[in-house]
Length: 160
Image (cartoon, rainbow, N blue to C red; front, top):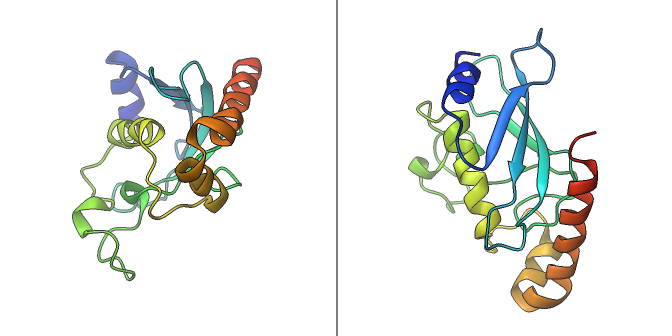
């Protein structure tokens, strides 16, 4: 919760964070603003961060609550990026240990990674294979249409 106080004192552009329930320090809600000059611009995406009891030794899990169409977010909303993967060696050999979770990471570094993921999807190891295929083959057609629909919906539901 010290992290929440720090974030609220020095907000980082592009997102805000708070506890879902004041009595539970392990569950946060974040609002991510779709980055400018990307297909997600104008969107307000709500996500939950769930921290393990041994944070910061292990990474939190992140799940979008707002519907989002993105190669690195699975259909349930779970975010799949290197920085949120358990520390150590990647048994598949895709990621270097330093790309994965390290205890020096904070909510701020996670959010910066997620915002950059929105701006620049990684199509090589997709969590949503359909979105990745559209992103590669029809970025300005079907992919763009689905993202635009998510952006519109996010604006309608952002402050519920």
